[in-house]
Length: 192
Image (cartoon, rainbow, N blue to C red):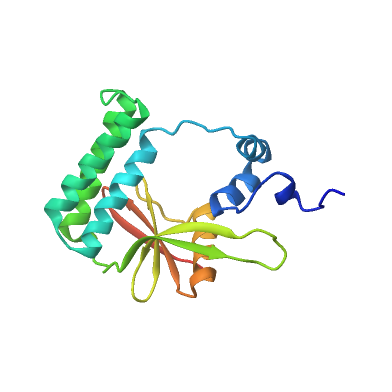
């Protein structure tokens, strides 16, 4: 007799906040991903990775030069791995955002002391037979930081980012905040 557990039926051993957000906003895309579909990411995803690396270095060592070089190297390396031409218009635009946001962070924009980066979290909920697994961007002594990068400043928290940080908050019992970085500064939102 087959199990009535849809996770085991489809070989799903865990879920992530990203998967939950995809299911809420696009059931068809979620099903395609469960079936193995992998979309190619663009230069904006690499912008976020590079800025995250810079923030982590600034938060752990405070070394502005290393943070700047690491952000640059990370962005270029991710572009190369993906096959995106660095001279592509979108890649050039995102590179400028990486450079200016990293500069803002180095010039006093980043002040938090980071104890750990990319900590794996696992949350088990009573009605879900598989754990929710994710990686919180930064763990500080008194809070979690989920870092998001934007081309422009924002004045409200995105529902998906709020849910992701709330899951991490529940799993760790530390308050979570979502930091949106842009070339102009950091906007911080506390998670409910």
